[in-house]
Length: 523
Image 1 (cartoon, rainbow, N blue to C red):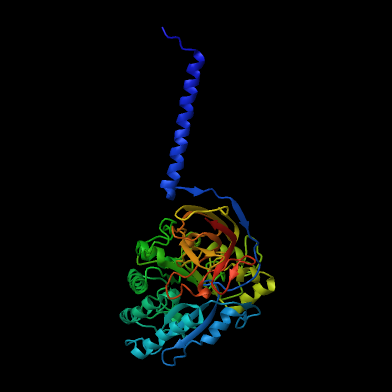
Image 2: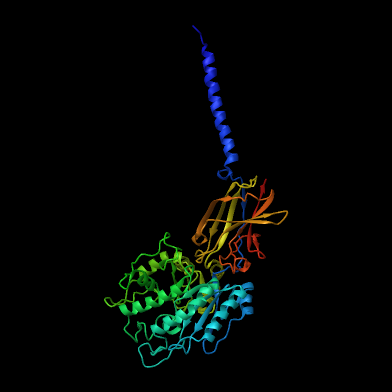
């Protein structure tokens, strides 16, 4: 009989366990070599940033400059004035405050064309204006109307009596069809299209053909009025690429477009899952042309009835609807009266103007009207905040990168933390790119990030992604930058169309890059 000492058994068990663990480690190490895509170095170093209080221009947000032109007396845009408004603070027309402006409201008043097609000469002039905007580095908020003139007389609404001078639906649809190629080919410099066309000023109210809800008419809209308006809105949505939005004058217009002419004022707003998907529902925003001027913003938040219901009520529901829906669409407009006090002041019980701008997610306002109210904000001490916070205002907090090293072909984990302190997120599509620039040669490697910039809503935003490093990236040190250019190829390399972060010493005006103040080593 062979006797085995118990210590020998223990030794064999320990040896077997050691070899098993060592084998696993060997396999693990081999996997790192043979399957490098799955390997990433853990994040190591953190760069922190200092917020800036500076006011500066950023695309598709802020106070807009006003311009108008008439079909029978066409005055083209002036590129020098547009450039000056974007690059230098300008005194607002009639205002006691200054602004930067990357947005231009462009009124195309089709005077004389309410009963006939647009001429090729007029179409060419309209098309040329978009080229001027592109040259100047701005974008246009556009609205078409047939008249901006009111006629007083012996009628219930004495300051605006019919006939008003707009066009019938057949003409409107024909004109939209004629304009479609221009809108499609110039979408890069269109910030938004306002529904327009209907009524005086294109504000969808005093109209000869689409239902007169004023005291001069029936005081409400019938089903056929809603259907005609829906036809116009549908044509406008079709005339634009799917990445551009149309602003309607009152939220009930959107509800009845989406849910039908019987839609209640309690209809459901957009959800985040539906937002920015290119559907019609996701592409209808709001222009409030009497912002914070009465409890319902002078008819903005009114129920206009239909064939089976009377006008009235619904204000509270429509305001709540807009607070939710507006988070995901383009919102802007203008003030029209300073009489709604103290609610429209800088500070008021329950809020004030800044609270309202934030709740309704405004991206832009008119700098030319109504400056009786806008000037009150300057005098009241809140205009500086309003100027800076209209739309988005993005502030970098910190960024975490594996600065200790990286290897070509491997994945690199990144994390960028920021805060949107503005009233809204960017409403049009925008790409986010991580730029790695070799500090010796200047050669750049650019990586598209998966984050959706349109969903950088007010509040904290954290971007955590894996970046696949090029397999042919040369060894060396690389400085990191965050680049948010316009997605259109025509504007992608134009720094004036890139987003600037509100931080000290991060912006490069020659490239449009934001310096992440981090250097990593590729080896």
